[in-house]
Image 1 (spheres, rainbow, N blue to C red):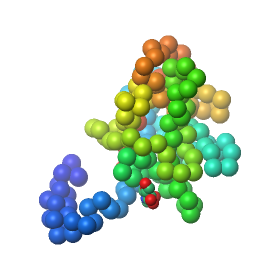
Image 2: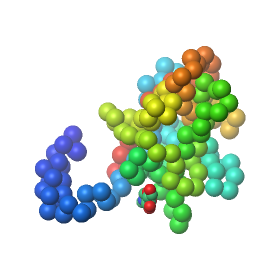
Image 3: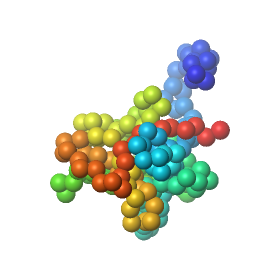
Image 4: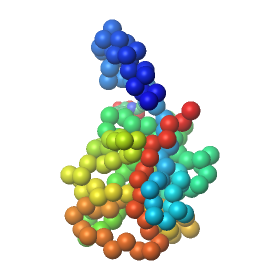
Length: 170
Ligand SMILES: *[C@@H]1O[C@H](CO)[C@@H](O)[C@H](O)[C@H]1NC(C)=O
């Protein structure tokens, strides 16, 4: 609703400065799990769990102070991690006949094809996106995966389908 009320202002600004339209300042947000049937997998924030130089697994924490601040750059999701180089959200390719695949936060701009719909982060179905999955996994914490749309998953009891909602950072 905040967005709607500021729309007239934005429209007049854009009309007066057409060249600035594609260069809106990025707005930071946290990615937070919602709609899990297992309540332990709700209200968790995505952060980068270091796995090697320039590589992180997308892991989840209840602690908002640990969350990695993200922003949308066109259709890429990037993270503001206070480094001179960018960090992006990478959806690892489906190449092992897996019904779900890992999500990583690595150096670079990440995978294209993201959008925010009804306050939730989506990836393109054409890329094989079948929704988000959270599993209790090997970093001793819940970890983020995405379901591969073209294979029927058998979801283990330690995993939950979730939405990733976009929570603006005030
Ligand atoms: C947005 O992505 C483009 C590359 O597609 C890059 O040149 C630009 O620096 C990025 N913006 C930010 C704020 O990282």
